Image (cartoon, rainbow, N blue to C red; front, side, top):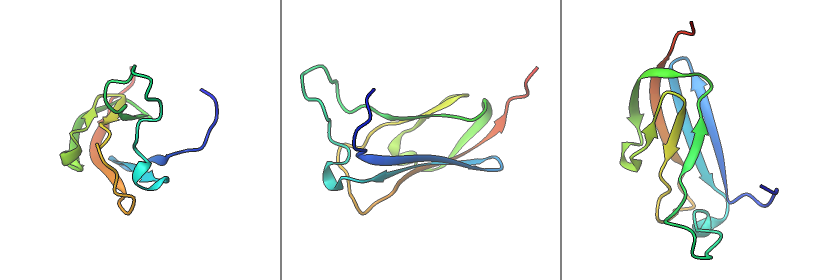
Length: 101
């Protein structure tokens, strides 16, 4: 995709076995709006981040209200229907690295 203005910032941080995915709005209440309304969209696209390593024993510790989907190698954060520009959206979880053979 071509570069363009960002509507939000997204960061994934790790501290030991704890991870935090943070979404920070950059365009006020429109930060999570659908950009292309040509009819092909089916709801808002989720935020997604690839994990730095494969994980097991994953437990969500904060942000359960967002109904995240966390697999062994990525996290999917369903996009909220509305955006509160004063809020930082976070999912926090723990996971143990899967041993590489």
